[in-house]
Length: 117
Length: 112
Image 1 (cartoon, rainbow over the protein chains, first blue to last red):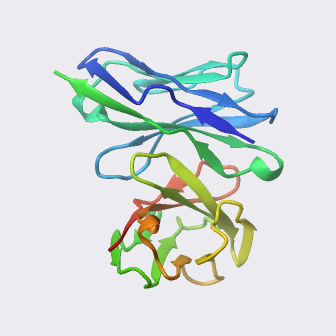
Image 2: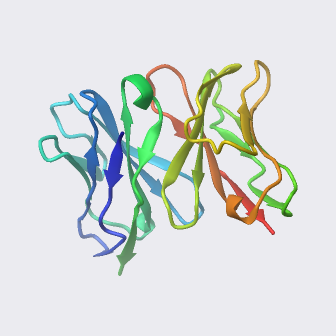
């Protein structure tokens, strides 16, 4: 079975500062993918960034980067230069690549980020 | 190229009624997933369908819930005899091949 753990129910960050949202995972799959999604108050799920388990480089997408530490089974999201519009729920998720875990995403419980002036 | 379209966005049903949630995947996508999000929780997988086939329904409640993805038309998640505990946001996602899954905006079901 796959499991995603997000231990920070809520985080505050000042505008223009960087923030790290924690995510650890557990899986017996050798090959898997890790994702971060943003859910603003309007409710939609917005894909932010993806990291494959065999990718050697940490993924980056604009102000988002994924700090992937495979041995520690962690996939933390780093948001640089926070903006007020970054205030939202952030979900870490994973998808296996084989057998019964293939395709479907397993989500964590989320971290609510509040960006302050 | 329109994204994943879900309708309705909001649905109110009385206890005991049926709820039908629709999902039109992105053009060319033949894989559809349904997830449920209870208030203040993450999304939980319900069912994975390809055209006309249920591939994985391990997350579906055994009773009252069903899903289909016909050859023509949208995917439908059907909840019979709704109860208050069914109140949640229901998300549909679609993908094609090894691509990332894209989510719709969700249907918020309220059972009164």
